[in-house]
Structure formats: structure tokens, C-alpha cells
Image 1: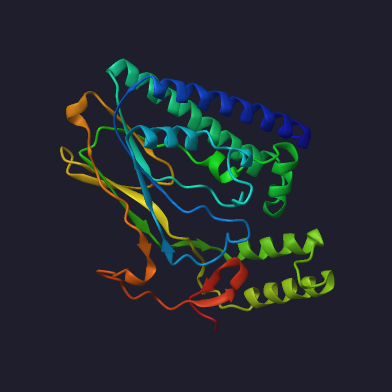
Image 2: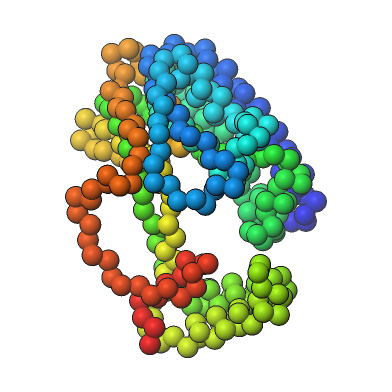
Length: 309
């Protein structure tokens, strides 16, 4: 696909997404609100995107004010929708849950509209990350040259819809993303960077090229049995623990946006828990298995190996 076609698809998809979100907001506003609880988190200021997070103060909102905040949150796609001092490189999070009364027919219509919105969100991400052909390091410039002010993390984030569970509790998750990778995969990534001719500050182009070549040689010198892993830290994030008594099943969901909960009547509203302030110094692990030792190979890629020789 040509870059021109990708840009045209990008504009069309963004327009369709805004229209679909507007339709969803109208449909949600027409339903009877049974319960609402959202938790406002401190905004991430520009320049603070990579600062370590040790404490997060939570402000709780209930009922109609919470519902209004949720609707505004679902439609927040552009930086124009928020303060100029807030970072556009970090998604605004508003964990919580909105419980609405909906008949079977109304629930089906809302479910279909949420599905439409989520498909457009996934489509937008596909256009930007795949169809555009733009390397990851250039995507920010590409997106903002065609959709000025778009906050991609907000635009990609799907909306979760639930059918009246028994309870929804909230908490925090702080972990690593670990992914097994092959030597060939990483070497090709480094070679592609080498062929691009670009340098990374503070190195010159020649120095950066030498550094990449050294990294390629280091990877090729590892034993054939060495296992490579990407171990990337993920900043603490709010989660929801959804309990279904009939199935005797608890499901844990990432909760950057309010969960939409559809209830047939007021008697089926789930118990909504609170989200307490986050304090890294007070976290106690009930059981933390001893991890196998890993050796750092390329810190900027979060690349590790189980052995060096």
C-alpha cells in the first residue's frame, strides 16, 4: 500500500472513530444510570513520561459527575481535549465502572456499538503501525503531521463491556513484559537500524554504526543454546478484578478506562470496590518465586540472555 493511501485511510478511520464514539455517547446517555464510580489519577506532565512512579494519589468521583467524566474520557482522542501541560505521549487513565440499566434489546444495540468503536480503534492502530510502513521511531512525527494532536494511546485503547458481574474490585499491577526472541530476529533489527544510517544521540553516525556492529558481533558470539528474552518493565497500572459468582470465576482486566457494565435492573448492580492510593513502599508480595538469573545484553532494547558463554 502506498503512503498516500495509508494517509487517506488514516483520515477516514479517525473521522469514523469520532462519529462512532459520538453515537456511543448518545446511546449511553439515554440509559438509566444505576451506579458510577471512577478514580481520577494525577495527569502526567510533559517531560515526566519516563520518571519512576512510587506514589499515585487517587480522587474518587461518584454518580452523575463520574458518568460525565467517563463519557468525556471515552471521547478524548486529541490533545485539544486536555490541558497543554499534560503529556501527549502518555495516555490519560480513568479507572472505574459505569453501571447502566439496559433491556435485552438495548444491551444488544450497545454491545454492537462498542464493538464498532473497538474495531475502528484496532483498524486505526493497524494503519499507523503496519500499513503506513513508517518505522516505530518515526511514527510520532507521521501521526502528528496528518492528525495533529492525536494521542495514539488513547485512540488505540478499547472499551470493555461487561454483563452484570457480581462484583468489581480495583487494584494496582506492577510487572514486566517478558517475551522470548530469537537471535536472528534481534540481529536483523540491528542490521536494519545500521542500514538506515541514522544515529542516536549522543553518538555520531559513525560511532552509532560501530556500536551496532559491536552489538551484532556480541550476539553472534553467544552459545547456540543461549536463550534471549525481552524483559521490559511496565509502569504500575490500574486493574479491575471481576467476580462472577455463578461461574465461580474471577477475571483480571487492565482498567485504564471505566468499564461499561450493563444490568437488566437495579437488583443486578455489582458491588463496586474502591481504588486506594498507590504506594510502592508498602507493597507486600505474598509469594514471589525466585526468578532465573538473566544477564543484560543491550539495555536500550531490554534484551537479556540466560548465559554469556
